[in-house]
Length: 113
Image (cartoon, rainbow, N blue to C red; front, side, top):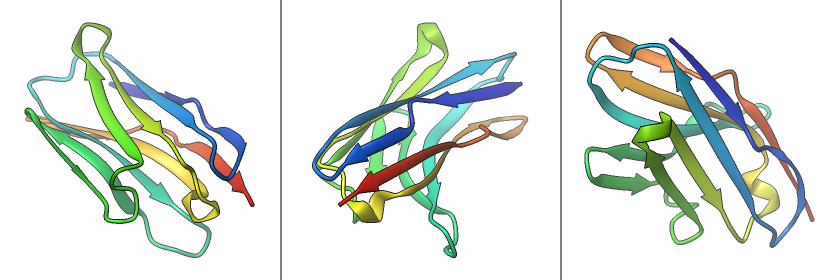
């Protein structure tokens, strides 16, 4: 199983980016999907997660980020609007199946002020 994340880049504050994470291979019975980020010098934190039909978001991104999934394409997305400099970091996708958890390689998001 491999997860390929893409869509990061450099954007000005107030701008938008959409991250994608494509899963290849056989992930048996996906239980949850999520996006995490890690800023320089900080621990990795959860940004958004999708568990069944329920979504949850970190407090700092509520109302600005939206997680979604296209099961037919084995893809999870993160739409990020009204970006702030503090959103800067490496964003990782994660998929949890009944046989284990899988991480993508990360995509860099940089928000300039």
